Length: 238
Figure (cartoon, one colour):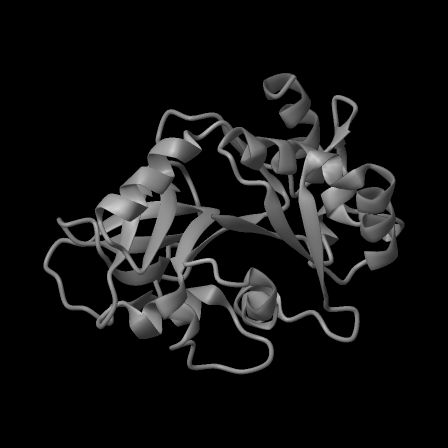
């Protein structure tokens, strides 16, 4: 399996660090989060990683080169001309995935000890088109799943906006962890071009494709998107 780390974002919540650096190089106990996540993927046997870049792209590429990819083969998907969000960034990188049938995608600004082996096994066992890592935690936006753990919709809990492409009586709210495994079948049916979100792709396809949840509640998890969260991460991930 190949992986992709989404590292192109502007990281505006992480100012002032991101005024001069990309968020992927924010440091937790002496290690950039990009290095931590590449090493995390290697623990699951993933040795080939695509990293998309936009904000201070040169710094990320220099760090990868200077550290020999921290032991992994790292390919760069260059979005310096325009940041494409999650869906657009993934779609642009598809040619770099080669003949991989599945791609594990994760946001650069999260840290977790979720069991990747179990995650990958669940994806394979379910013969899923996509598997979304989720947990029971407080979040303003969430995915909605049915009793078979299949995606049926999305909700903004602050505004009440709900999208429910697949009708179900008792949708279950789960917070998305920014980690997903995507089968190549999804890439062939992504209905958008340019800049777009993978959330919109999943909502468009959930009625016709098997998009499953993988609940990792209880695992360590943090989004280091703010200076306060970055400080907390240093207490959790040694």
